[in-house]
Image (cartoon, rainbow, N blue to C red; front, side, top):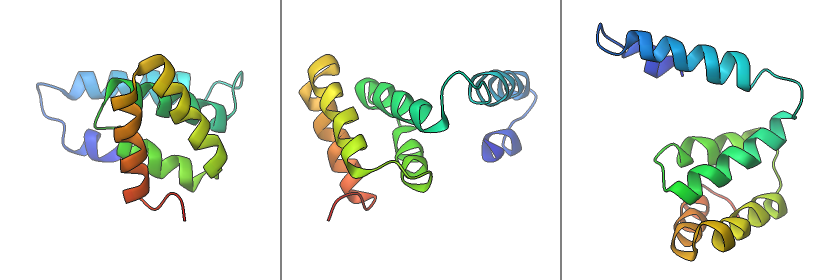
Length: 101
């Protein structure tokens, strides 16, 4: 988030401000879901869509204490509902980032 805001210019500064306000201000700070639940949802969506932000969210999931079993289940859901290639890529990326033994 800080890097995106710092790299903003006249073209995308309003967009970056909106994303910061909506994603971090309203969505992630809402108390209806825990941070862990939001992390699992976000990781699953990004994995299914094959988005580059998946790396950031896999690191965040590890930092906030998601367990290996929780991540495995998220990515297995991705395989069924988003496609095996997407899940395979996400598993591979997670292993590169230090998940698993």
